[in-house]
Length: 220
Image (cartoon, rainbow, N blue to C red; front, top):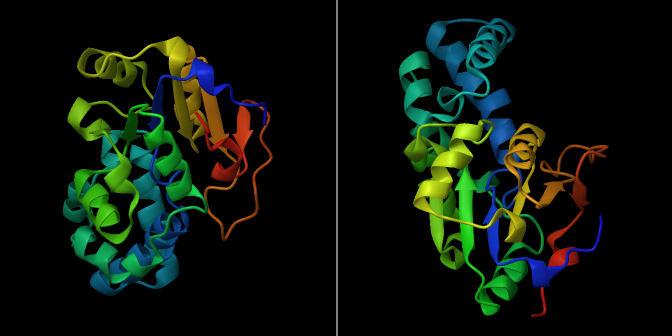
């Protein structure tokens, strides 16, 4: 990773799932926990349930519905928020996230959560972790009407929270989100190497890579 020049950074935008939080919770929930309950509800084999559910996911990938708890509750006939509570013990911050947030907070730079997560997911994860107390603002794509993968999201965000493209750091684990941000004009972008700690690290070369938040803790 290239050295981050904190003197150029006035504002910090942070993704939640896979960036501040280990993506293992979400991957396990959507790939295993939901299909298991869907199979039981529909009286299907787990294999068929996964096949059907993954097809439904593919159809809405990259849209707000893909991230929407209420959409999946209605679509599947399952209480998604309740099912998340069942495996909430898997929710965990990445190493050195709290130390990083504490250090940024001391420098008085605004820390803004910029996430595609639905509000019900945000609420659950803030109850189970400590990162929320360091945030100055929480912005969900569901409030803006567009996912972060689109230029419309960043245009809308500028109108409600004006920021300088040359002096704002965005850290995310999604390459499609980071590509959209780069096209919009962001000058400081970092991609998380290993969003899910139960999976092997990714090979990445399109963006500066964040191996650990310990690397970028500011001292001023």
